[in-house]
Image (cartoon, rainbow, N blue to C red):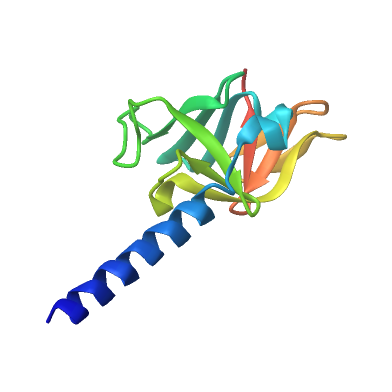
Length: 139
């Protein structure tokens, strides 16, 4: 019986060591790309508007609104650090799947005016593509 308990303790310790080593590979968003500073808007559809804010220290917030201005469930009042791991922008070191965004294109200035569903990106305006959605810098 003691031998079985020791195996479980050893296995649990090994899992904790591996998981802490894996999570350490996340980097602050701005150490990967400083152009992420700002507030970003993505209009998924008229009843779902996402806002991501990332400050100079990689800390910020994430909010989703409906068309009436009501905050939806994945919004957060808490300020957390935005991190990037394997081209995925994540809201905090431990984020929910709804607060993780696959980066298809890092921030850049639009060369021409882009008309996309529910939004327009003006020439020269910064945008990023995440989860195949166009996030436009608003500030």
